[in-house]
Image 1 (tube, rainbow, N blue to C red):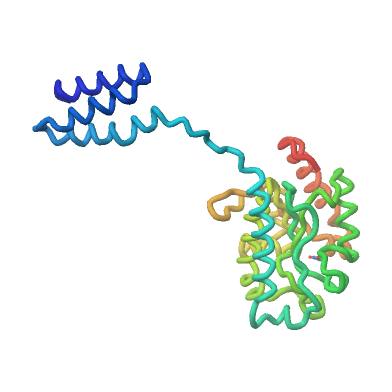
Image 2 (cartoon, helix red, strand yellow; image 1 turned 90 degrees about the vertical axis):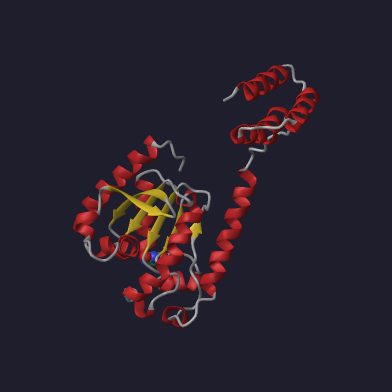
Length: 265
Ligand code: URA
């Protein structure tokens, strides 16, 4: 910095300490008429004149309250996602189902459960997990003191597959785009994937649920990391009661994490 610019800077600092905006502006306009030899000085002065001085004298309040718009955004985004799925074209699942089964529970919840797809009862009622698997799911949640109304539940596919078949890989793939959006909108602190279809939809088909369940994993969606537990599906536990001990171990880990993160359920 040469002497000329150092003088200006010193004068501006003295004036700003005194809050003397007018004096700073007069001094700077005088100063700007001088013939500079050093281009850097001109650039430095422009910077000082345009940014710093406005910053020093700006007394506008900063609006930091975002809570309400965020909730409204979430409701809008969920309804947009719902209508995108309602309008899906050329979908075998949609053609055969009675209705869309979008989700159930509290959309403000920090816990989100993903199942496979609606069965007969879900197709009739338009709600996930209301049949036998749902009854077992409710008991599993009660066992770790979670009220079903306090969590958010959806499925990999949102229409009942014909004869309750497992969704095809192409269907899992197609719907995983919606599911990822759904997760990003709900933005849970804990994500619970129930069964191999939910696991495949988000982590790919090359892994086995018996190896992957029971450990915390990180799922990344839109640069955000979601803490995720893969565990057995309640419908599988209804067929394989001897596997319930593993499910119980997973549920205890989930409860522990809820307490650590101080999530209210
Ligand atoms: N099984 C699922 O995966 N989801 C349901 O909604 C019901 C049964």
